[in-house]
Image 1 (tube, rainbow, N blue to C red):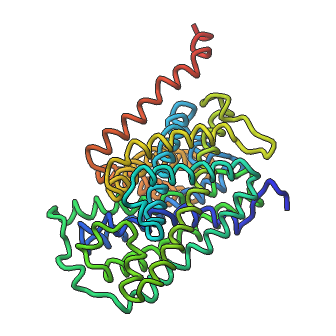
Image 2 (cartoon, helix red, strand yellow; image 1 turned 180 degrees about the horizontal axis):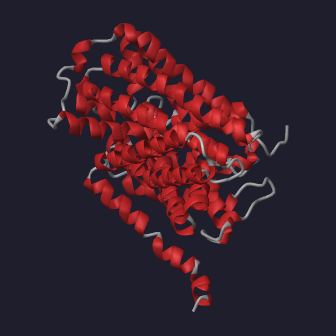
Image 3 (cartoon, rainbow, N blue to C red; image 1 turned 30 degrees about the vertical axis):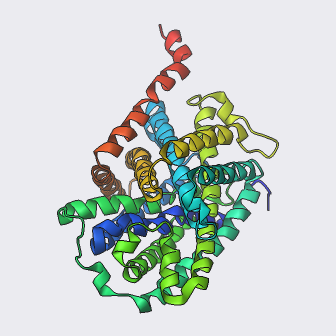
Length: 433
């Protein structure tokens, strides 16, 4: 196999590995204030994830050689400016995702090194160390990144299965009573928890992004996207329900390592360390995978003149090293800016900001899919339009669930990209005068 290409196993590991990361391992603590009703949030976000996975799987067959996933699909269907907004919004989302993953990674390392929970400066330095180590890994060949992703994905699934399958026997229904602890209406609580849990599904489109580096991309990407999302949904719902039923809500709400705390309650300290080690591997794998994506998206845009040319520059391993390093610098800044919050508070804010930022690419991808199908297909138009419309409505609902503060910052960051677009296209504007 070509050392610069990845196959089905590595492609599916990229999907599962990017989804199974900090989200599932930290979410039980973020959901604890809502109570058992958050399980309904999981159900609705899972439905949305299935819609999105199907959408991206279908787009990958229509445009099999398009690097950049949502960016490439939007550009093909809607043109340069919407594509730029997608690339910018997705890039912002990746900063937030990688910052949130790093916070979760440090939180689970605190099980082994409690000083990390007590010394913010040491926690920051540790997080920065992991960001820059995996940034270096991602400047190696894409197959090296793929193998790292495959190994960490296999290892990270084990603790989730362990908690989900064994923990169900220790489940206490009274931990879910009252069913809605939030003090909000049921609809509002479900909307908010669906938004929070959708973060755990971000990345189902990961296999579409290095499309030209994928063997048999027309079929491989679609299979990896849909199968990977299905596996992840089953693992998430089973394990999240188990943790909420094992750990008392008053403890869970302040936990920096919910899965490890759950394991300690039914099998003692040894199990806590085993599960915490699995969570550390999971977050490391997710950080590795998302750092790959943070280089690919701006590279694809730069090739079309929609990002600075430096982002398209490749090193001897054919990796966009400059783009990866610039992005990692921004991840580091965002993590530093939010470490003044509690660990759970910082994670929740960055997680929701990431979710909002990625909604723009999802909405534009749905519109592009509808246009492509309408223009190129005679049969199956009705089902395709229904899929695009359902995805669009789901995305709007998630925006509502993000809350005013996150919506403000999300749209501020999105709109802040417009001056850069004007600057990049200034010569083109002048030529039209």
